[in-house]
Structure formats: C-alpha cells, structure tokens
Figure 1: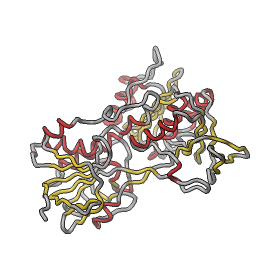
Figure 2: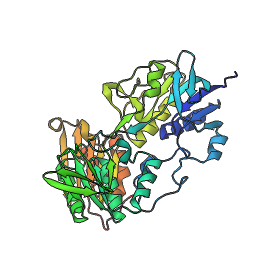
Figure 3: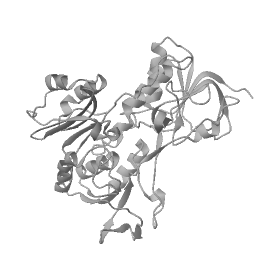
Figure 4: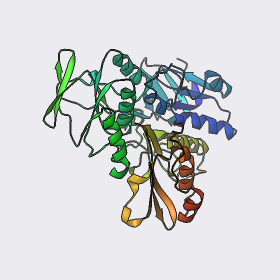
Length: 406
C-alpha cells in the first residue's frame, strides 16, 4: 500500500496552526503541508462562537482563512479525525486504519470541554460551548426552551449567560467560585457586573456545587441553598482539558498538556506543539487566543533549529458582558505585597496597574474598552508608572462603547 509522505503535517484547526503556516511562508519555506482537522468547517475564530448566540452565525462566518488561502499557500486540507501517532514510524493513523507519514509534525489539538459527572443526568444531556457544533446544538434547544441552568462562573459561563439573557431566556448561574470571574478579578471589579446580572434577572448561586440533577418529565430540577430550582436545559461551563491523546499515543512527554521547551519542541525531535495543548515551564498552559497565535509563529521559526525562545509574554483576556467591559492580564500570577499597585477610579471606569521595579507587570481594567489595545501595548513594553499616567491617563468615557473582540 502506498503511504503518502508530507514534509510537514499539522493536526488541529486552530489559530496556532494558521499562524504556523503564515510564518513558514513569510520565512520562505514553501514545503507541502497537510492540515488535518476534524470539524465540519474550515478553521475558525472559536472566541467568536459563544459571543454571537443572539443573532446566530453561518458555517463559514468566522473562518480564519478561505480555501483559496490554503491552496495559495500549498496546504492540503484533510477533514478527518486523527486516531493515533506512531512516532517511531513517523506515521499518523485514522479511524479507517489509513495513514500518512510526516517529516515534521505540529500538534495544535487544543482543548475539549470538561463535562461533570452528576447524579441523575447523563453527560450527553448537558450542553457545552467549546466549539461551533456545541453552540449550534444549544441554539437549536433554545428555540423552544425558556429556562437554563449554567454550571460554572468563569468567562465562558458568564458570556453564555449574557447571550441567553439577550435572547430572552431565564438563566440560573451556579458556581463553586465566591463570585463570577473570581480567578481573574478581585471583587471590586465584579460587583458592578453582579449588579448588572441581577438587574437582568440572572439568578446567581455562588459558592455552591451542583451534585445532583433530577429529570422530571420534560424538565430538570436541582436543589441549591435550600431552594428547588426547575429548568429546561443544562449548560456545563466547568473548564477544559488539553487534547493530549495523540501525544500519549506517540509516547512523548505529557502532564496536563504536551510538555514543550522554550522553542516549542516536545520530547520527540520531529514533533512540536503549540496553542492551548502546549504546557510550558512551571506547568503553564496559556489558554488565550493571542498566546496561541504567538506560539504558532514560534513553532514555525523553530521547526528546524532553535532560533527564538518563548518568553510567555503578558497576553490579556477581555470580555464584554452585561454592559460591562472587563480586561485582565497576569493577575493570577500576582502576589500583591511584591508590587506597587496604582489604583484609579473615574465614574464607571476602574483600573489597577501592578508595577515591579517601575515596570508594568499586570493590569486590571473595567469599562475602558476603547483603549484595550493601549493597555496591551503598555504591558508588552513594560511601561513605567509615569509613562502610564502620561500616555494612558485614566478618564471617564464621553459615551460608553465597547471595542470589537476576537
């Protein structure tokens, strides 16, 4: 049997993959690339999906590049799921036992939703919003359902709650966290968000654990804080885990993610990894769009030699929910006693800027969304406190506007 061999194969339709291809071509590499992806559409902007539930979206709306782009960049597309990798033979197998061989392999397989095991309900009865087909399934259910329980108070859970409320649905948000987005912000930033959520009718249950959900006819019910809650559908936004199954089959080193060095190389010299599946030193898995894009670029630069090390730059998370714009960068790494913190408020705008040796190391911001790119620039360039005050002075917006989000 003839087995097709490619100089470079990518598994995973992510921004890391697209950035990898783009950078290879910019660097002058014209080798044939095979991109293997298993979803029912071209690689797309995943961060757009659960933010656009109100109006819905078509299959090609958020694609990162069209088919012509791949053709023009000498990329062959293969829309199947990879089953395993034989690193010794440098071969990728599919479910039909057919295979392809690679010279170099990029694993950019991303993450999958963690759906909790709860008494009284099967995992497949619950919704997630990790990919486009997940959200499409939820939107179909929302057509004739009114009341939703969302389990999880992280970004995904809060964004989904915002979209469902805007679609005229009733939402219960239950979370183990003391308050929504606790891992990204102190409560001072979240209090306005909570007030806005409550005003829009969201029923908040913080500091609780949903252990049992009972099916009652065509509805479900659970008990939280002594109250019986009845609802039509369940959305699980309880986190993600890196897709490391192919890496395990290949025998390369994994922990929570695929372990990589500062050049994005794995323990196998011919396999690299990038994006949400890559685990960096100190156990860091970034989970951010622009971080994955940067890693894809570095993987391309370092594919054949070690040219540019990954320094884990301070990428940010931003979200626009319930009429609040929230920006968080590096907060989870902060030990406050070691930093000089600039705290400023102006009407609806709030920010805390964390400096060490007069260099900006982390930032939190509320409702200054039009200048989000300037905050990101200040972090990347480690502005001094005086430069922040001069070039990015806090000011109340003339009118409240959100900036576009990825």
